[in-house]
Image 1 (cartoon, rainbow, N blue to C red):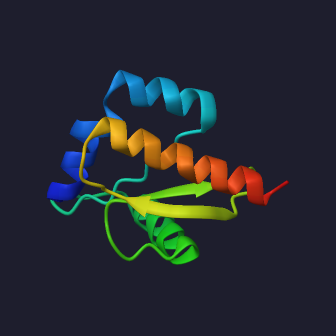
Image 2 (cartoon, helix red, strand yellow):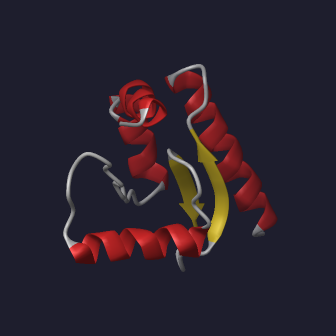
Length: 101
């Protein structure tokens, strides 16, 4: 239902290089907000609460959080594919790491 979500999944999130990078730097959590499939009420409420807590107003949204769940950065789909996306994530990590020193 979401073309940009599908592109992000296809170009980045499903790629082994991303998965290896993420495994070394992140704990991944994916919340899905399907439009064409019914979800249990508890999942709908969980997703609604997450969207409110983190100010998610568009999809796809990629959040970088610290260990306590505090947002450090927010991004989404970016043109260019895997290489530029990994560079973007590394820049976010560098920025958040240097600001937390």
